Amino acid sequence: MQLYSFFNSSTSNRVRIALALKGVPFEYAAVNIRTAEHRAPDYVADVNPSGLVPAVVDGDFSLGQSLAIIDWLDTRYPAPRLIPRGGEQRTRILELSYLIACDIHPVNNLRILKYLDATLKVSPEQKSAWYRHWIKEGMEGVELLLGKYGSGPWCFGDAPTLADCCLVPQISNALRMGCELDAYPRGMAVFRHASEHPAFGAAQPKSQPDFVAS
Amino acid sequence: MQLYSFFNSSTSNRVRIALALKGVPFEYAAVNIRTAEHRAPDYVADVNPSGLVPAVVDGDFSLGQSLAIIDWLDTRYPAPRLIPRGGEQRTRILELSYLIACDIHPVNNLRILKYLDATLKVSPEQKSAWYRHWIKEGMEGVELLLGKYGSGPWCFGDAPTLADCCLVPQISNALRMGCELDAYPRGMAVFRHASEHPAFGAAQPKSQPDFVAS
Image (cartoon, rainbow over all chains, first blue to last red; front, side, top):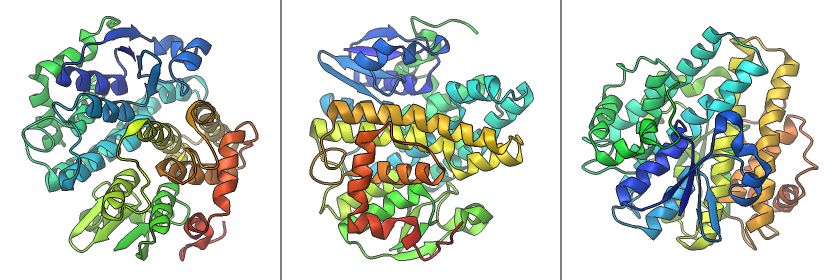
């Protein structure tokens, strides 16, 4: 299996965490989204029609969208399970994961920040304020959901789930962008716990073959 | 069950479609997101910690995030099933749904357009170009995925699924914003087919009790 990934992409990071937790071997195929390799005609035609990272390819099968990939991996390699098959735990894990994947990450990813820069010509201060605004709005929701339904040391109990695959890269990204996250102690406790787990270490940006310090 | 919804919200529309397809009765609780009722302290505390629509409340149970709600409904009211329990069909339905829910909708929703207006002070032309840019980028992916894996008259075969619950409100929204969608014949064929289905009719913005012409 090949994983098409960019080291700093937090959606790629989600899938890398899932693969590492499950111990699934894969070949790393670097896609430099800074130079728009994800929009190259061959990539769109052969790997991912969405023109985004991450994607997995396994023989004739190819699949994009990090959450669809993790759902597929969870069926194919069920141990450890990252999305329970039913019950309220499943529902809460999905709710938190979608809050991050639909309402926090997309508005702050590289293509959006590039558009703000290149097309709308916003100032660096305006771009930074944009990023912080959506992190604050989203992380307030994350913190409330964790307070209402979560239990440590992971988002939902004793083992990492899809929610942790989403939360940890998002926090890592926000810290890299200089956000102040002390107002979210529950989220940060999960993040610190994850930082000591080898799968999360293996999946982090600086452990990837295409990592470059920026 | 109460559904907290705003008539024009395409994420609310997704859940309304699912409820209508399944024939689940519910009470409509209007949340005016134009006047920020979704950020009101009582709503955040009692209904949806994410501070967003839609949400469902059923006795002591409350749940946000449209895709988590539809997953929950699909377990509770399995007929008709909107997300197959396994198989490649499930994977393709999730891939397309996430492309819309994570990569198209979030960057063009009301809170983002308001921020562009009120905080970044972009011109109406710039705001419209922003909207059209992300619709084009996203709909190109949708069209390619439908071409590669889909079959009519719905996104994936003879019956509506989660993918249609996501695609139809997104197209409806794009048309309302004046986008030209002729370049996406597969998506538009699904949209036209859905327009004749009573559940999609019942779920559309103008059928809601809080509808106002704008």
